[in-house]
Image (cartoon, rainbow, N blue to C red; front, side):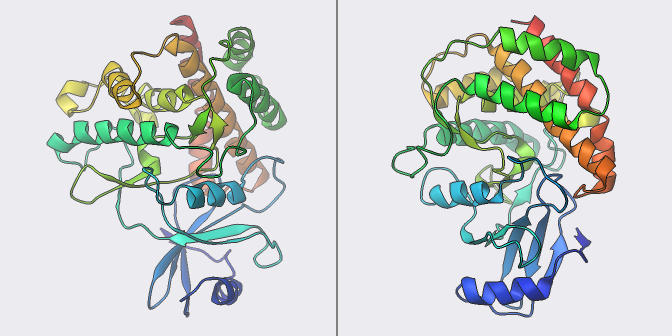
Length: 340
């Protein structure tokens, strides 16, 4: 982590005193180095530690960086089978620190940054993959009515809505012509599956580095980063895991690696584990869902690139690095499309 001079800790402390029971300063803040979308800080006091996530500064796309939605969904999931941090308070008054933010408990667990899991015991790696499948099925099994999330996203064809949304956002942040994106966008548009009636909670960015695990056991303590969550079709989340694994090792993937030697699951093993947890036999036409997920990630990273060029990136050095991968994700989408 790095110290941050961009967060007005005095203003935060005054607000927390009024809105979080038991809060006592003084308060110190450290900015987490990872993450590109919503700047995230550890807040340390003599009695407790908290985590604050805020909207970034600068001009933002209308539907992006919705910290209020992150707060709402995690608060709604308290007490369900989905492990999440405890939410403390949401501040939508931008005059406090210049943008909306929320504060949650700090979950002390291990963050596994890479699907190769180099710092995890060999005999736990496959178990962690299985835990990922279990938790993902739990997310998709959430009772939308009981949790008050039935209106968390629009009804109708999820993929139609998402392709339209991310095409629009990609065009709004486009900095150069990427031939693979020009091929992928119309292919997705023409190959959207018929609506099969499945409407569940979806995380939207489900991957191993958006989870915290017990320090000793292959048990998830919290799923993080719910910014892209909505109600929609569950198979996009499943494809998000496989998408990351199919990227090169230089882009936090498993492409070309000997997974058996690493002790991690093959793609088909994870799909089978998820299907068993979800109570289904298989996912038909999985290549479409995978192509869609590559496309959406390319759109997300293009937004990171545009913010970096505009000087609004949460982590400028990391933004510049990931921005170069937009064509890689577009090419991954084309490969997946050809597998359908």
